[in-house]
Image (cartoon, rainbow, N blue to C red; front, side, top):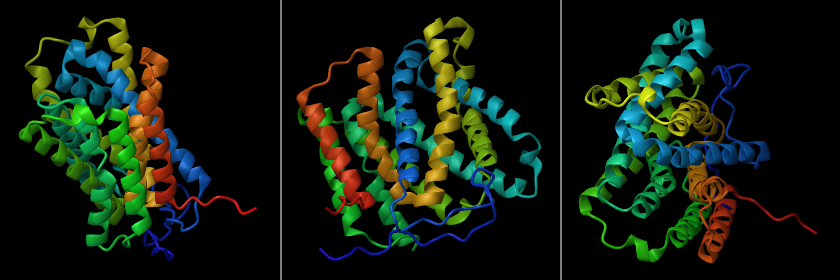
Length: 317
């Protein structure tokens, strides 16, 4: 197979600093292991939300817990951002945060939780794991990326590993409505990644994340208002888990936006394929969930597929 086309069109530099948006680093053709480490960290942090969510949802319900999760995130980000929320790019950061908040927080999380009420979790895991395919196609359509056969091959191999991990037998009998909701969540997540890459990648990350969280907080507020459950009424483990979910929304989303900025939308989305593997490892460590041979084989396929998608080459002897 010949060399694949360049993965991303480079962004122009905007001065020093990644976190304040003044330097949208160019997407590099050569593999950067620091970028890979950031992607792995993102996957571990993002996957930990599923473990913490299992604890919180049983006591608060999905949408009420999402409201309080983003209340905590807004509070912390407001302190971190300070006056930068009203800086020269405040208007653009607000618009970016509202658009991305609707797509990556409200639509993605809302549709995913709704799908889980209609179909089994393995169905949702597999469909949401298709986001790298959707992101790549959207990126090509918007001329932000070049078509890459290596990425498609790697994504396919990783997806096969995910199916192996969740179990083929568990993918039977999915309700059509639930599958459509999960597909909608996948499209929303992918569209948010492509829009950030194309329009907002030079924006300051923390203010954008702040307005994303504000958007989600207000959208999930009606569910909290209709419920009598508050953080003061739950157990200590649930309260700690809720606090961790706020940290996930802060650090996880910041890393996600940073990955899109530095590596491109579809490459960033590829790290989501590590989520079942990270979730399995965290569940085994924290919840004592046993690891099966199929899990090990699926994990190997996921890692191999990601290596192909990222263009990892074995060292020459």
